[in-house]
Length: 301
Picture 1 (cartoon, rainbow, N blue to C red):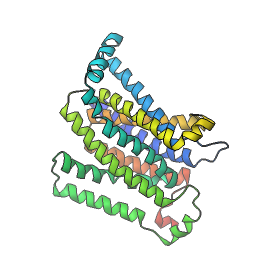
Picture 2: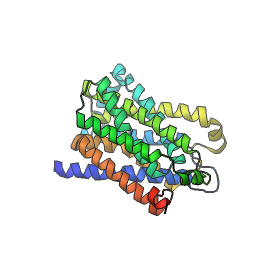
Picture 3: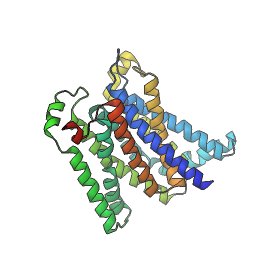
Picture 4: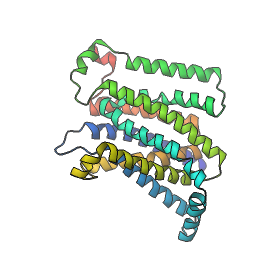
């Protein structure tokens, strides 16, 4: 049973990661009449959906008893304010990261984004060493160097890219690159900080995700008010939302839950394998379906 859950969670992770990148990219570059949906509001809605999903999971763990659910939420969240406040830091960083991913995918093709975003493995390793005192072996550091080299080759400009850059309508590649690099550092720090909190307490992952979602919603609403308040007051909170937008929001909300399931039923090695498979699938779909990425060898032919 546990083996089935392990491979099921890994399969869902591959599907969720690949689908989120491609649908988010497509939704941000699709030209339609009327205003485009606001990424800041999509982040808030995703956090609210994640909270609802986690509450349902806690309800299930409480043997479907509303009284038990209320007691768990009261004891683990309201009666432990300092433990809850600790989640404000990673929550704010995750909110920033989620907004940056929309910026990155508005300015980079899906394949380039996927490969570059894997630098979060390096930042996570560095923060793990500095914050958790973990020790990495020679082969692990060598793998990180190879990863950095691969990302550098992906970003290395070619002659044809100078011509292609004039035809880009999605925005500046430099802006997208800076957004995804910032997201890598924020992801590494927030992930290690969250791991540190989980190891120091005995609260369930679902309770921690509720706390994260609560602060994430607050920070997200602040971002909506500061950056898009005028647009929201003019065209509404859900302006530009369509079926594709809701798919993106649901996939983003599903991400945190899937990662928790993978950590519970699988391990980080298999998680990395699933992420690598997601990169391959994203590249193939980006080339054959979205047609916004052409490998260098094919571009020069």
